Amino acid sequence: MAILVVIPIMLAMLFFSFSQYYDERKMIEQQLEQNTSQLGDLLLGSLRHSMLNNDRQLSRELIAGITQNKSIARIWIINLSNEVKISNLPDEENKAWSMKSPGCEQCHKYPVKDQPRVIINTLGQDGMMRVATPILNTSECWACHDSEKRYVGVLLIDTPLPDSEKNILTELRTNLILSVGFALLIGSGAYLLISLMVVQRIENLHHLLKAYTGGDFEKRFPMDNSQHDEIASLGQTFNRMADRLAEHEAQLVQTARVRETAIVEERERIARELHDGIAQFLGYVTTKTQAAHLFIEKGDTQKAGAFMRQIEAETQKQALDVRASILGLKMVSGERQGLATDIRKYLSQSNLFMDIEVLAEVAPGLENLLLPPEIELQLMRIMQEAISNVRKHSQARQAHVTLEQPDKGLLEMTISDNGIGFDVTSIGTKGQPHFGLATMRERAESIGASFDVKSSPASGTVIFVTLSLPEKN
Image: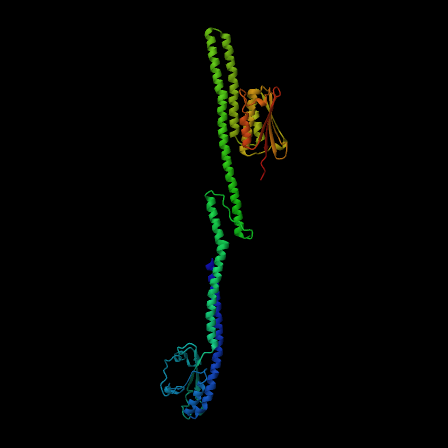
């Protein structure tokens, strides 16, 4: 990008410098041509009298006087036979003039009518100019020259170029040096500016993207409050994206942990139910069957029949427990329709085979409540565990599951029964069952809910689960 900035600037400045140089040189050349042509005419006028009288000595004296001026370097008068007739250098007189000398070739390459009177830098020396002034063959000249000829010779004058011509060359070199210097300076500045403002910041974004791709969401794009450009806006967007990705990653980790915990807890619950239910039931059936078999061998069919009826009753209870467990598993794996709908669906099916009736009461504002899957799963498991305890231990005839909103942002689920109750203070002491209360409390704490139990002998039992509702985005 710096090169793309420098090259156009350099070319523009060079073009401007050359354009200015050629304009000034053309203007000066035009002035020089005019001035030197007038100079040639003036010198020819000064020499005219001596040439008409064929007074070479006077001509030489006039030329010597003229060449004393530093503005005139050399003077020649050359006839049509290319012979030097008069020169400020006497050794050159009466010698043939070479048409291959500098200036002659440049002038005579044009047609006669287009030949220039002024040739610049024709002598191979910088800063020199030759002026050619033709000598007309007037009537005064016919006495010595053929009247048919238009010219009788030419007056050549070599004069140094004025300082203005040298100055514009010096200015051109200066302008070129300044142009290159300014272009390099601007290019270096543009490079540093682009590097600081664009390249380094883009590289930071590139490194951040590589880090994000590798799963590292801790790094952030450095922000400067003084910068409000597109890259800063892009950096803010990346930082927000990184924050959300980090939150999402944390949520995924937390969700995975909760799921792992839920799986472990579910396995423990199923194992406990198998141990507390089916294993004990099988032990009970084995003992009763052996007893009934002994009474049959003794011929006491009445006692044997009593044991068989006990086995039948316990088998029916165990069948209810198994069906309740299967229903709970189906409810968890089914499609989510909202907490209130899932509770009603579970109770409507479990009431068909349980020996107690469980009713659902839902506050109007909670009918369509949708909770995160993990939260709803734990609430459903707490309710199922509580109802299982009611059916097994409370001797209640009826129970209620209630969903209420005691305060804004809170959800309270209660499971109550009209059973025999128990002494809450004795829970966990030696020999006292805890009816899965510890498991329910752990489930509530895993979703950030509080868990409380109120009960006393002959007064029934109430379980409270209070949850802060997640904020809606």
